[in-house]
Image 1 (cartoon, rainbow, N blue to C red):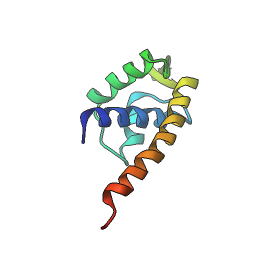
Image 2 (image 1 turned 135 degrees about the vertical axis):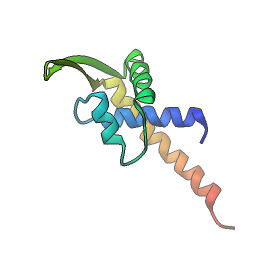
Image 3 (image 1 turned 90 degrees about the vertical axis):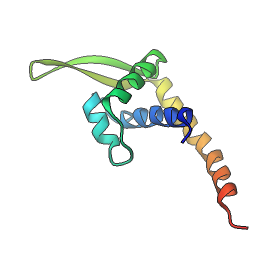
Length: 102
């Protein structure tokens, strides 16, 4: 798969993983795992990119005496998910064209 396409899809998956509730890194990996494999070394740069792009925010929460970073989707992140859903319709049309039988 094209690396740029995969990168964009991973970002969308991370946003989708936190769209319903705030979450932290390990939980995001667990939530995505049934659909694709993502490592911590891949996830954390994505989270930093999404934060710098203002698609999510980070807030610390104490858990068992340690500080855990929780991620929350922003309105801009929700808008990106909605835009992706619209873009995907076009991608599916292209896929159907490419894979149709003669």
